[in-house]
Length: 240
Ligand code: 16G
Image 1 (tube, rainbow, N blue to C red):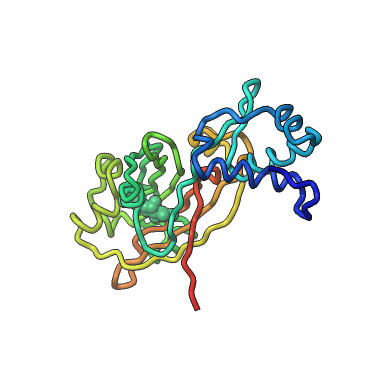
Image 2: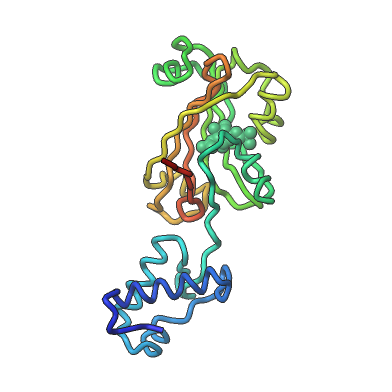
């Protein structure tokens, strides 16, 4: 119900009501939402107000629009804890999703100034540059570019990359991955990201950079990833 005497704006009340229906399962992913007109008539409010509520929910990733078809309930965002140092493979398996990768490119390149400084190696030293799309149950979630010293991690192959890098480093090269420092910022999807993540042009993305270190402090990788902002949500536990 909408309370017109409430100090809460009407668009906000509509948003909350739709969110509640999504949370309690009354609206399922990919269900069509009632039209703006239906909402306006039901609550006796203007279509502008309904549109404002729906726009906000589209921007927040609860709903999505399809040209000429209407507005639909979006898949729930994947919620990822930022408290542990895990790999994409581990994260997806922990959720019961099937992880996979689509390799876009895999090369050995000479380290430029930036990469050499991130990996603490000399300028022009050989590094792997690995660009992968990471998928969960065949849905593209992130586009990831990993840089790793080719002198440190020998014998990387396409087959290994299509499985798990962390598994190879720990179980085959037998190096101990210990800690990482990570930054997360918002950005707008590049053309490459739009294409490979199957998102609309100019979509927001979560841009993550991770520097991962081995137990002796040696840098293992420098990673730049673009995560879909409509599918991902990060949580951090804080205490005092
Ligand atoms: C995650 C890591 C990435 C790492 C990859 C290994 C972030 C932002 N990135 O995607 O740094 O290289 O896992 O995954 O979390 P893999 O073992 O499945 O290949």
